[in-house]
Amino acid sequence: ISDEDIDHILLSCSVSWSIWEAIAEDMGVQLVTQDNLRNFYASWINRRFTNKTRRKLWLASFFSTLWSLWMQRNGILFKQHTMNVESLCQIIKWRVATWSKAWEEKIPYSADLLVQNFQSIPMLFN
Image (cartoon, rainbow, N blue to C red; front, side, top):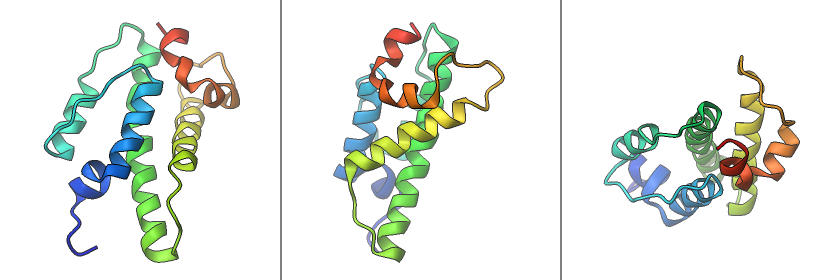
C-alpha cells in the first residue's frame, strides 16, 4: 500500500483500468490511456455528445466509477473485502442510474431498466 499513489489506485492499476474500460465500452466509448488522473478526468469531461442526457450519464459514470473504486479500495484495506470486478461494475451502474433519478430532467426508464440495459445507453440516448 505504501507504494500506491492516487493515479495507480484509481487509474493505472490493471484492475481499475479494466473497470474504467468496461463502463466506457458499455457507453459506446473506447478509452485512451492518460498519464495521470487529472488528464484522464479532462479527457473524460471534454468528450462531446449530441444528446444532453447521454452526456450527463457519461459524466455521472465518471464520478460513480471514481467513488466506487475508492470505496472498494477502502473495503479491501480496512475490512478485508475481496475484489469482484463484475460486482463493482454493477454497483457503478446502479449508482449512475439512481443518481440520474435526482435530475430535474427525468429519464423515462426505471433505475432497474437502466442498469439492465446500460450497454444500450448509446442507442437510447443518441
